[in-house]
Image (cartoon, rainbow, N blue to C red; front, side):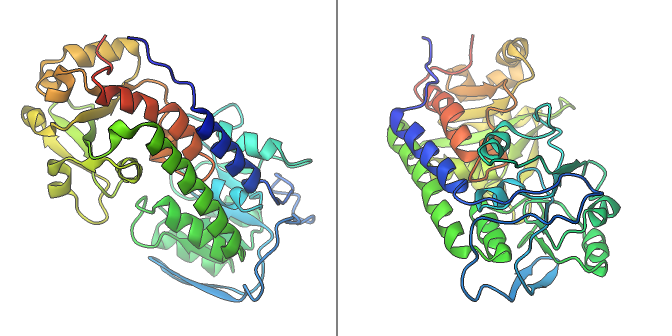
Length: 354
């Protein structure tokens, strides 16, 4: 049975509305670390009496005295948040996993392209940690790192350089998209606009849930074999992938609920216990269509009842599920459109088994 991945008309309309809201007012500015004289001018307005504002987070307490104009974003999807609130960051992570030729994401570029004169932010790699010296050269007046893995040492170096930094609220990589949007909105003085963007994003999720009612109440496990075949990784209820599936009405499997611990986004189980990964649907990743076949033929994977019943889905397109793994107001509509129809098909027994 061939599955259609075309977005429902209502979902397309909701996504379009969200994109227009994200671009209602944006700033433009240089992407060169050496050209810092012309500060971006935001075209979205700050809330009355927005500053000074103090934001508590896991690494400290940050007070922002006035509206930031040069914003640097640290974290895979972090740059999406200021852009969705009308501010183009002057610096941001290179998108090194599933990125495009701009070291960016297609949804970021699409939103950026709607802004006359806007340019890409300076992109830097955080593969070996936050590049403090590169960020300092950009002369930011705010660094947001709500969905990052910034360390206390890196945070301290940036704050010692006089740069306000807003880190994650609890643990690295554990921040929900709602928390990031709220925190970045506070830091930029745009709490009211953040509330609007949140409501529009939640409507996209609600529209998707309505389009695929078979998801409601279905249990799932999002997991897969490690490079070392002796164990499987399993995403916990703290990871953003399961969180968004729960927002769609699905339910974590009993094993995941039992093994999830605060601050941890995955755990491992031995390969001999793969039968315990049972749920109404099993979700995983694959390197290629050939790899999907290899997984389907793997005796350890076949022990998972959902795989045996073709109630599973293995993502091959690396950009397809980014809207769940690195969610933001810009990426979530993409994930809802491109990934969730596959999950619904797997629930119906039309999964990835060739």
